[in-house]
Image (cartoon, rainbow, N blue to C red; front, side, top):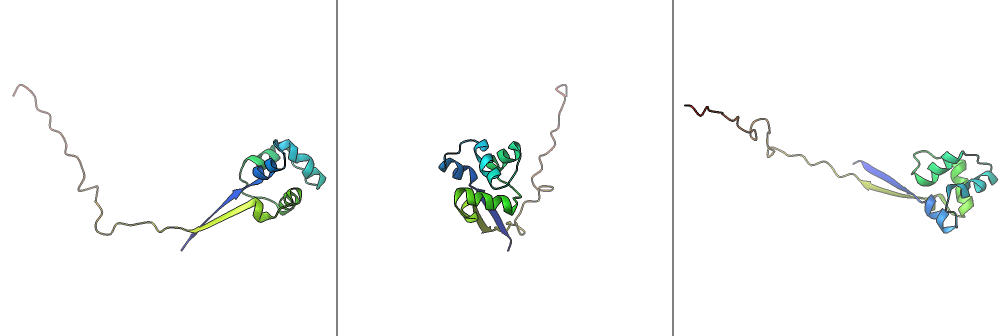
Length: 109
C-alpha cells in the first residue's frame, strides 16, 4: 500500500515566538552562523514550504531557535486510500446515458 507523506514548515511560527516579524530579522542570525542567503531566498524560506533544504541551514535554524528539526518540520504520513472501482455495476455512458437526437418538423405539414 502506498503512503502519502506531508509536512508542515513551522519556521514562521518560531520566528513570531522569538519576536522576529520580518524575514530580514532572520538574516543577521543566519550570517552569524556563516549562512549567506539573499533576501529573496530568506523570504521564500520563511513564507513558503521548502521542497529542498540543506542540512547546514536546518542546523543553523535549530541553533537560532534552540529547537530540533522535528520541531521545525511536523511530518504527517498516512496510508493512501485505494481508488474505488466499479465492477459490472457502472454505467457505460457511451451506450446507456446518451440523449436522443431531436427531430425538427416544419409547421406546414
